[in-house]
Length: 144
Image 1 (tube, helix red, strand yellow):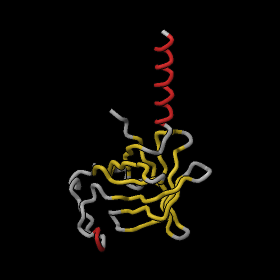
Image 2 (image 1 turned 90 degrees about the vertical axis):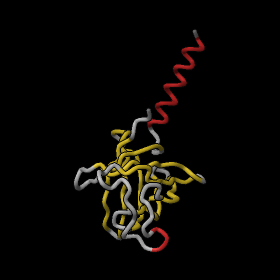
Image 3 (image 1 turned 135 degrees about the vertical axis):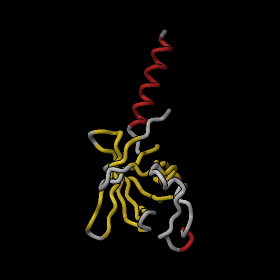
Image 4 (image 1 turned 180 degrees about the vertical axis):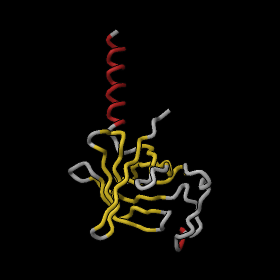
């Protein structure tokens, strides 16, 4: 009986810790139009936050390529494309980096990522261009 309680408590603790992480799959929603755009996987590699597009949700754009991109990304599929590279965690629990890439507009921004303090199933993603910034709220994709 004690083993079952220990296992149950351990499972609940693991689930709680997992749900409070920035890592996992997130649904992006355009903050201007409300359109669901993509599923992005946020993961860690070499101790740093990375993110790539796993699936495009926008109808008719599922197989989109980066037509506005230049160089090696020109006409490459957007699915699988890395959009955040080498973001470092700071003391406030935020991740910051210099490469937040928007393949729709082929622009790269400095970025900041953090969990919404009021709802850990929401991820705040902010891109900076000089003194201007734009913040989107991404929604956690429930694991099946």
